[in-house]
Image (cartoon, rainbow over all chains, first blue to last red):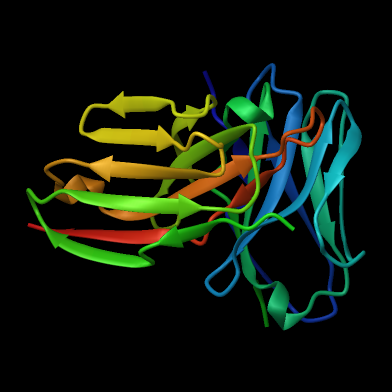
Length: 112
Length: 113
C-alpha cells in the first residue's frame, strides 16, 4: 500500500513569506502528526490531528498552524517565515499512535 | 516536559562488533518506539515495545523496555555497514488522545567495513 506522501520535497522561501506543506497519510490512518527536525534541536512535535480535530499541540509560535481534511489529508502552514524556520518538516500517520507511526520523506524548507 | 536522553550521541565501530544504545527518561510512556533514519529521509519504525520488561528481537537487533517503562535499550549483534544511520527512540504519552511522540536526542551510528 502507498506510504505517507509529502509535497513538495524541497522548498526555498524568503523571510517574511508564508508556506503551505501537504501530507497524504496512509489510507485508513486518521491520525496525522507534524514534526520539525533541525540539527540543533532534533525532532520536535508540532501538532497532531485526528478526524479533522487538532488533538495535541507542541510548543511552537502561532505562526505555525495546520488543518486536516475529511479525507485525512493534512496541511501545515507557516506564516511570516524566519531564517530559523529552515528545517526538515516531517509528517507521520498512524492508525493508533502508541503502536507506531509511518513517516513521509519530509519537506526540506530553506528560508533565505 | 517529557525528555528522552540517548547515549551515546555518536558511535563508530568496526563491522562485526556488538553495540548497545540507551534511551532514558524520568517519565513513564505507554509505549517506546525505535526508528532508524537515513539522510534525507523520514524515520522508519523498527519496533514498538509496550509492556514493562518486554524484549523484542528483530534479526540481529534486540530491543528491551525497562520494567518501569521509563527507559529502553537497543542492542545490535555483529554490526554491518547497512546498520549505519541515525537511531531514534520515541516515547508515546500515557493518556488516550495524548499519543504524540517525544523523540530522543538520537544516536548516530557508523559501521566501518
